[in-house]
Length: 227
Ligand SMILES: *Cc1c(COP(=O)(O)O)cnc(C)c1O
Image (cartoon, rainbow, N blue to C red; front, side, top):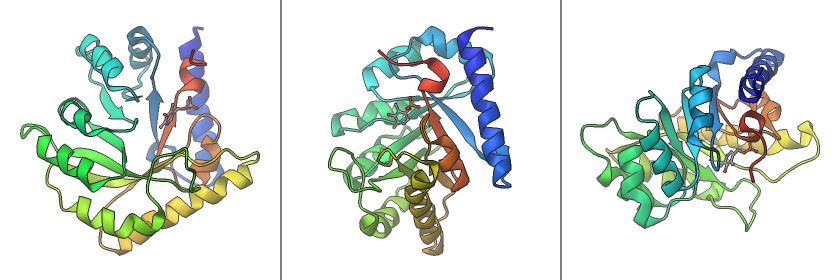
C-alpha cells in the first residue's frame, strides 16, 4: 500500500479510537489534511482516497496548488498568519481561515469576500499558553473580539483555534485544550452561535479529541515529514 493511503487509514482509525474512548461520535471530528510544503500530487492522491478538507499556510504556494487542483471539489482552509495585504486573495479563494486575531483582518476579509460566495468561515486563534513565539489573542480579549467579529456579514465566526506549547504526556496536553473548550462554551453563553474547536495536530491529536476537538489539523502523520 502506498504511504499516503496507509497513513490516512491509520489516522482515521486513530480518530475513531480516540472518539470512542470518550463516547464521542467520530463523525463529529473533521480531519483537515495539512498539505503545506507538499506537492499538489500528494493532495490529489489524498483526495482520491476521500479526503476533502486541506489546510495551507503560505498564500503563494497555496494559490498555485488551488489552481492546479481546481477540477477537484476541495474545501480549502487557510491556517497561516494573515497579513493585511493577503486578505483579498484569502477572501476570494478559501473556505475557511483559522488564525484570526485582529479586528482589522476580520473586517478586511468580510469586506473583500465576494458576494457570490457564502461567508468565509473563521476561527479566532487563541495563544493559550501565552507564548511570545506564537500568534493569537489572550483569552481575556476573547469576548470583545468575538462580539465584534460576529457582526461582520462577509465572515462567519465558527469557533476557536489554538496551538498549545508541547507537553510530554497526554494528561498534560489536555490542560490547554480543556481551557479552549471552556472558552467556546463561554462564547456560546454570550449568545454567539459557534461550533468549532480547531485543535489537535500530529503530536497531540488524542488529547485534543478527548477535550472536544471538532477539527484536527494533521500534516506529518498523513504526508510524512516536511523538508
Ligand atoms: C503545520 C501545521 C499543522 C500540522 O502539523 P503536523 O504536526 O505536521 O501535524 C497544523 N496546524 C497548523 C497551524 C500548522 O501550521
